Length: 436
Ligand SMILES: Cc1ncc(COP(=O)(O)O)c(C=O)c1O
Image (cartoon, rainbow, N blue to C red; front, side, top):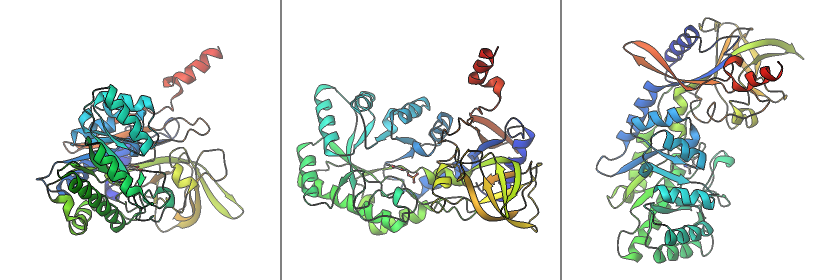
């Protein structure tokens, strides 16, 4: 989310419109469409305009249909990694020709469906390549096919998010003994393999590490083409993974810094011999989203102050389970949406509603003293947070709203209905029916 001022504007709008309410909407999440649109424009401006580039938003970062629909209107396609994400992208009216299917575990059924629809596929391994080869023989398809390559350039600072390490489960390991040759032979014997793909990691990878991975990928594609004596590989898919700065209020990602580095390190990528696909997720949305939750109770335990809020592992799963890798900034507001005074900081834990002790979104954090009825804002949570909930304790899904300026007023639209109101919740009304 852009600036503290913008956050406060959205917060007050949400309270006024009762998108947040201490009794029946104690948590909600917001995406600032104006900020996202500007960010996407910066992404597009960072790539050369004389080369075909498809910016396929990584749907895993936020697969709500209205989100994919909106990003489609901004000119993005979609990268999907499951049948569900594929269905979401199609429901979001993304043209099948602008969808890319990546997953290390594509089933026969998923492959058949993608090939029937003409969705581009990045094959993960040789066994999958054999399946696709077989399906191509028995089913006509417009699908562009590529191979996901693990350039094995190393891991970033979060091992669980690093996909170009020596032992990553993704892609064909290019530097393993004999693999480069085996892959070259696979391309040579299948002239319809027209793409090459790499995704070095998601958060925690430096731009330099990512660029090293793309350099290895393009070098491989050049080798295929020189062997083939023609431009067999015509599209390079550089994946996503641009790291997001979770420590500052700077609104947008450094797309231009990234492409400047690529121009320097991998000039062949921009030679005009290749069209380009990107798969950014977090860098598109994270900074333009926030989760807001009410403080329900506060207590002091063993000398430690704890605020029990409605935001925990169900919306901030990675932060709760891997707090060192995914720390979040938190801001404190009073019930009317005014910032809590900054002069009375206390060391506090900020806990969620889940019924396990580790459900903490912050530990030992210096924050204005939180009281029941206050609001906590979890910043930079537009991607991989509320849209990817953890179904623990059967907590209801929080509402997700898009907010944008409309002739100097803020307008919000529902991206996902909240499940809170028991009357509106079909499960609850069923239970009430049963109870007579
Ligand atoms: C294949 C692939 N592409 C793109 C992405 C998106 O990464 P990010 O959201 O960091 O840009 C991921 C994330 O896991 C991925 O696995």
